[in-house]
Image 1 (cartoon, helix red, strand yellow):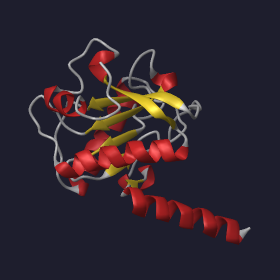
Image 2 (tube, helix red, strand yellow):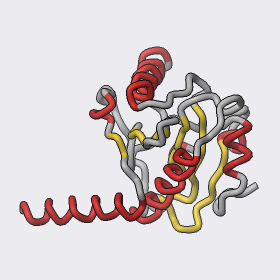
Image 3 (tube, rainbow, N blue to C red):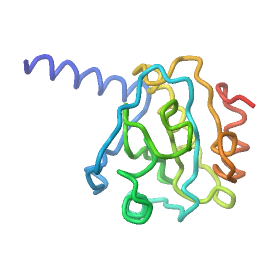
Amino acid sequence: MASKALIALAVLLCANAVLGVNIISKSQWGGRSPNGKSTLANKLSYAVIHHTAGNYCSTRAACEQQLRNIQAYHMDSLGWADIGYNFLIGGDGNVYEGRGWNVMGAHATSWNAKSIGISFLGNYNNDRLTSAQISAAKSLLADAVSRGQLVSGYTLYGHRQVGSTECPGTNIWNEIRTWANWRA
């Protein structure tokens, strides 16, 4: 049994090394346990990109505080079971676990059951993406494909394409429209 666990850990570490994905777990950033969760299927056809429209963070400590603030707002004010997004990316270039893999998010009405939601911490009508954030997002999407969470020909949308919103902000919008899987 221990050898299976070691093999699984080795595969995960190799995948992280190859894809460059280092996901800071919810427990590492001080997140609360969810009040409930619904399973999200594999082989999804869509990923939806967001911004939190809040404060930008450029250090791990500042990003972790933002994550706790967002989770508290989503759970305590909106009454959601957890933070809305599957993953969030800080200005520090780190990927932070939100709801994580195979858990349905609360990020895009009518799209939650058929997409993963990835949000950038900050307001990208004003803030600008760093190369580290872009690399982290692309690596996370590649990881989602390699895990089978997304199909290889998935469609990437900005939140504004599936809802009436400015999200993911003009600067992210202009960036993601250059990515291979983005569709009009």
